[in-house]
Image (tube, rainbow, N blue to C red):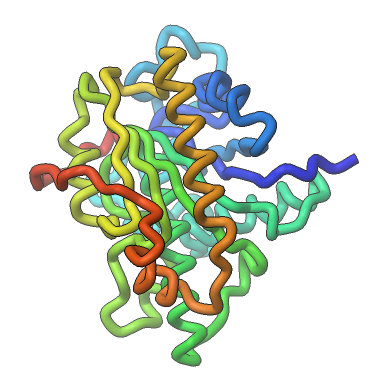
Length: 280
């Protein structure tokens, strides 16, 4: 019998894999098991193991990246992994559709995204792509052909960095929106050596009316301390419960009225720091 729970699509960091990320998220997944099923996906580009992967996960390769790992100027849309010309967002939406068919659940079960490190660029890219297609359809500039029926309600960004992955629809719009307005939760480890990049990502690419910051005393890893993991699970569930009841024809209506509903509190915006590490 198909699992009826809502789905969260999960994206690993650079030099990792879906198998590694599933283990890293296992505590969180257990805490969320009555509310969600977490689904894990692999990046398309082979690369060497990333930060914190070895030696613990030496047997869980091959390791992957979401962008060209050997390039000095990797394509912002994550393309180049095959001859199709598809961007990385289109590829991921296709994988999400395929997973739904294989496990016999509808595309409407996809409710959220969760990314770690470089994976936050895919998670945020999916949210931005959804916003842009909403606008493109309203302006009569096309309709999304992959991922029809997938309507994400929230995102979770853990120890991230870098701009959202670009997608095809960005080229269809004049002055495409660069700010993610779909509600998001951002986990920052205060001992993370890449914390500056997570703070920059939060500051530059997310609407402060719909983004919430959760800071923990931890390093560049998924939360594993019991109290921190339980609090993260509580916040994820709360975020979903607060967004699931607000179905509107246009996301703009949600954003313009968000303060009226007082759904989210926002931490003080943090300092702006330039540059993005390719290892994220």
